[in-house]
Image (tube, rainbow, N blue to C red; front, top):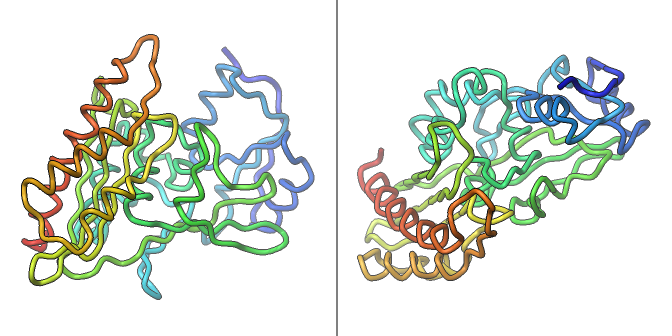
Length: 292
């Protein structure tokens, strides 16, 4: 099927893109990587009258650390993260989530900003952003504002991004020493959207006490879930098997899966969310203790 007719714009500055967005409002869509948008248009799930392609805008693709944050430009491709030595060595949770994302063709075109803004329930990155306590810088003609990850994801395919705003940067706090993370994804086939995924980010004190904890669950529900109760249980305690099992139980209790006509039962998703979290915590601890 072909998309419905639309008018195409390729602005060369952020200001020009924002002016177009303000002019055409709800009838316009932003094209970044296009790996989800184009498919939705071809299936006529959506039929925007105006497409604003932001790929010609400079300074929206970068990976750097400054002022306490890892900063990712919204147009940064998945492949840029996949082949970044900084990401691979220092942000294993983010690196693993990218390695498990679709296939090389999609990773060459898809963007980190497009992924979080699309907020598909089975997407990899929203749960990761919750585990990292990330922030999103969004820009409109009236200026910029920062939205915490916990406030950004509102529901399936919905975010706190206003119609006149464009996501320009993602900020992830630079991990402290003795930090470890792990991402696990249960999928039907390699590269599919997640049935259930778990993202765990931990930092340990030198006596083994957890001083930072982040847990995000994706896929199981209509929206990524930050497991705050489990994070609070870990904080200030030394990890042991009983504590990890209790965290897994909390995750199972908190997750409220939606029954799918052709998907696994909700109870299966609940159980697997707990199982994967236990596995991810154990691997995150190994990395925190080994520095890998």
